[in-house]
Length: 149
Image (cartoon, rainbow, N blue to C red; front, side, top):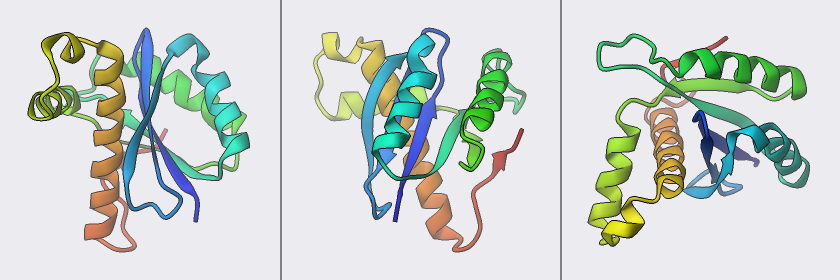
């Protein structure tokens, strides 16, 4: 099998997470400067077998898209052109930052570590990926609610 790569896209930096090759566990991969994101992804998919890419879909509590969607849409469109055979999906990322902070608290990280925005972004990407995988497992053959551009 191949890995699934998840992206928590941000204006300045982007968190990345990836599954193991058997798609059992989601692990934080890294955080990269968003300006370097496309090059990083292209290099990563050359080195590793990646089945699909999952991008966090930014929604507000009301269900409307957040302001970050205006940056994500062009990114996803460029990604699809750069990797035309790679499925690129979007899945709801609401509350991932809140969950990331909660996870850091529960893990006993010190306040200084919890303020590390890059770590929050990486953990958020991991949460996006984990929820995507859980939704796939709970409905075999069906994909979680997502958005296609």
